[in-house]
Structures are given as C-alpha cells and as structure tokens.
Image 1: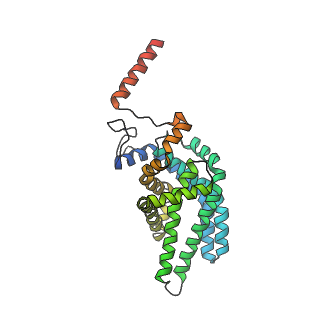
Image 2: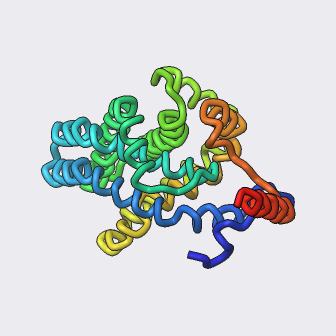
Image 3: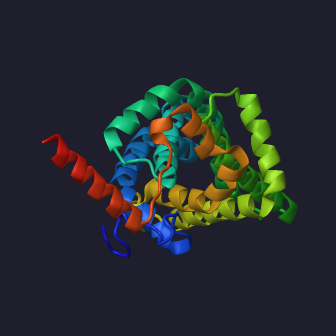
Length: 278
C-alpha cells in the first residue's frame, strides 16, 4: 500500500513503532493477507448468515438455533483463521497467506468448533431478539432493552478475549473462559472499549443495509478485528506473555529488531563473508 509508511520501517531505537505509526505499519505489511483471510471468513459465515436471515423472515427460533449449530461448525474455524492472521501480523510474523491459513485451519479446527457453535447460537439469539423488538406492537420496556444491550456487550467482550486464546494456546475451553473473565475484570476499560468499537461497527453496517453490503467484501471481519485487537494487543501480550511463549516454543518465530546502523553493519559483514567464501 505504501500510503503512510514504508512497510519495513522501524523505530529509530530498533524497537517497534507506537501509536498510529505502528497501526499503519502493520496494516500495510499485512493488508493482502488480512483482506484475503477476511474474504474467506465471510465465505464460511455465509451458511450461518443465510440461516439467520431465513429464521428472521420465518420468525422461527428453531431455524435460528439450527443455523447457529450447523453454521458455527464452519464459522468457528474460519474465525480462528482470521484471528490467527491478525495476531501473526501484530507480532510481526512474515505474512504468508495460504500457508498460514491452511496451518491455522488444521491446527484450530477441533478446538474452534464448540466455541464457533456457541458464538453463533448466542449471536443468533441476539439477532432474533432484535427482530422481536422491531416487530413488537408495543415498545419494550427500558429494562428489557438494557438487559438485551448488556447481553450483546457481554458476548462481544468475552469473544474478544476467548478467540485469541483459542488460536494462541492449547488449553481446555473452561480455562479459556476463566482467563477471559479474569482479564475482563482486571482490564475492564480496555475490554469495554474494544467491545463497544466492534458493536458500533457492526451496528452501523446493519443500520445502513443494503448499501453497506457493498462494503462487506472490502472491510468485512478483518478491519474491525484488526483495529480492536490492535488496541488490546499490548495488554494481552503483557497478561498472557504471547510473544515470550511463542519464542520459547518456536525460536525461529522470535521477534527481532535492530537499528538502521546495526542492519548496515550486519549486511556488510554478510557481504564480506560471502566474498570470502568465493
């Protein structure tokens, strides 16, 4: 893309850029991978989307339940691949779309099915409740609306912390849920902000349909998940020691930074060694 910074730009100290510079740097370097992974995620969410739409049109809660169960079987692994792409980018892994996508699908398929089903079922219930509010003859009470909005917020907050763990760690789902609740309690403002950002994004897309349907292939899942997790990443990394654990298990994936001067010296030495070998 090259719109803001060179994709390989590094901070003068040899450390990571920060703030908006870091956001655009990672985005430029991983845009193609995020975009293609987002398209794949939309594709695998289609069965759930079609089923949910039919459930709303037919006012059938049973259809919505079935859409959540069977749609979640495909949506879960696809969502795990989307999170894998986001977090590989945030920890500066080399962006390789197809290799990483196939690896993430194989690695997370089994562990992401049940979370995918639960996510889609709960999301389906929220969609169905919104439909009931819309077609209701009387305006629901403020308590009912507040309870509904709380359920949407709680689901979004929990999913925002659960899915990164599914992708990054091999642990029981109960432990993942426990970690997520403890994280939310300790870092509530950040978890709340990331969740509200996602709710506003999807809410705007729904309210402006059908025009926003044209934006789905362009932004879809990848843009909002990248943005929300960019805001959470440093906290998640500090809490779960993501990069330290990955570096310990896979030394070749350890993050490496150097100043421009150190890079020049290293390249000169490599060139001298190559000349010596000749």
